[in-house]
Length: 261
Image (cartoon, rainbow, N blue to C red; front, side):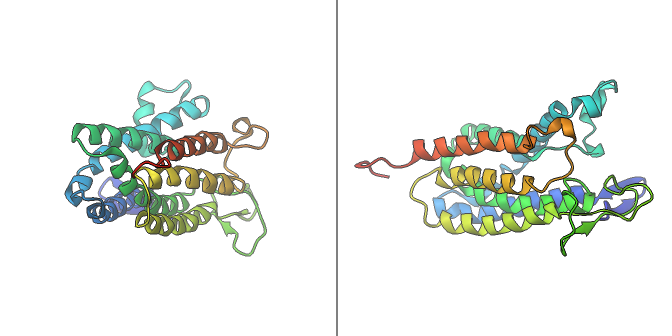
């Protein structure tokens, strides 16, 4: 685990930021290549990139501030809320923020909303692969202690390292999610070429990611006791809502019997 990528004078470039940049680049590039299959110019999808970045960062930071106000912000200067470089982003908040930004963009440019959502959905899964690698390099979102052969150890000084003891081996939850998301990306990309209705791929992404995330959350070890509810993490609870939203979307958008697609 090496949080710092390199130094540019007084500026430290972190691997987490590098991986987030790669996530957006890979996502937008693959989505723009996919767009012509739905009759939309790739340039129009590429143009949405800035909107998605802003929406994702604002949403991810907002949910983090709400979730961890007591531990991270109470009693501190108000401007700490905006210090994203200090860390503190929640993926589900980013997903919600980027979705809202995408809706605004599609409406502003008179693009078919569900076609755009389907174009972007597989690329969201691909970007997540890079994002979780960034988490691994940053040392966040780590797993519970375990003695499995593939357990990983963080270096001395990290919060998983007990004072005076060897680094604790933990589940590599970041790697779990990266590998599962990579497989999910290929599955969604294949399904995209066989989809039956607009909105199907995005709805499938919401349901599939909620299940994927809920599975990996069972191995997470970075939550404090106050954030656990009968063994369920905050992401477990949000995943329920995301899955329901995807299921309702799938049901509402699917072609009805006797009606043309």
